[in-house]
Length: 510
Ligand code: AHR
Image 1 (cartoon, protein in one colour):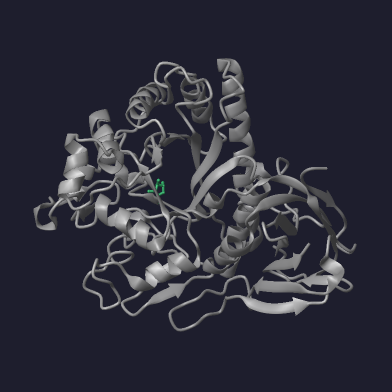
Image 2: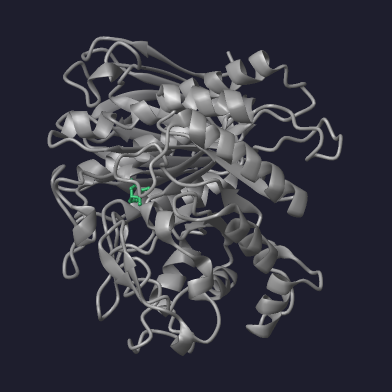
């Protein structure tokens, strides 16, 4: 029974949740709590970099944003795009700032000043204590440029770009581990959109050269949603063993992870809060495509199975918050519950998810907003904080019996493919023996008194963290925090009530 299972019961029956502390599903990769910063809207300029603001340090970095990133323990941050990267030339953003060129920016139709670039981002990562993840320009960029960027960041040899880094003030290599082979190359909005076979051929050749230069980097292939034929075409071409590039080592692969993206949104609460179940299905489907590509290509078992890099996920309606206008979504409590359902899915699918990055980390479709005076934590900040703080270690099996939401779903295909329980649940066991149980009650108007079973829960010392609010439409603003975390304790006796439209995280010593 090594899994998360759901059995549907009638709405008037008593639900139950059984946590199996000793049934480990898989380690949860800390990188599922990753972030993403793109040169888009106010994410970089006015977000993490704001040199004229008194809240910034001597580098021009907003100190309140750094504090928030540390609070959320963001383990890895993707940069510099997103769509932006398709016309980005990294050399424009290094060296003396006054000599850096201003360029037209074609993804979001702005002007890129290049005052913030590679060295600034990597310094920011070091201050935050997070790992950088770079996305390569496979739009207008060349393989030469990509190789030069890797050399600039990672080489300790006496070569041109490594020396350029030294000249720019950084002696030791940054050792950037994660590199993505382009972003959403399949999208019609993309500068230099490509077809799957053409991209796949190019990505394979780039991967070969990049691994010859820097064998220990981790390369991420550009997938689509995980449930598209693009995904299989590129996987089939690129998950081929290449013994030449890998120096005859048949325990390594050119491609280490497969990237997929999904944004969900709906104007009705139940469809909105259950929509991220599609992300979980996407992980399952993309993983099956990885298996299929490996089987058809005869990839030996000695090559670790490639994991999913869910490097853009969130609630976003581009119609509501257009990208060209900075995509500053105002998130409701319903959206916060959707974020918790996304995160539950990543914990449940821990075996197959190597990284996930909420898009984005500051101002642009983000849980964290800056003003001239400080930061505002949107409703979606609070589930992210609770998960990142407490849902680490191993994902463990959990069985849930409860009623199911039976209405319209978004996407429509979700109905019949995935269940949409009113109680969406994941569980973990951390290294210190704490069990964590995250329960999202997506029901708008019903509390559920629930039987709870799990090693140690009856010892009487259960910590309770709850994210909820007066209604599913409430938002947080600069002056008003309608959604935050309520802390309490529970003695473990009798039934536990999961309140309507809430996320509850319970923790106890197993
Ligand atoms: O995160 C906003 C945008 O959404 C990214 O630039 C792009 O990759 C996606 O379409």
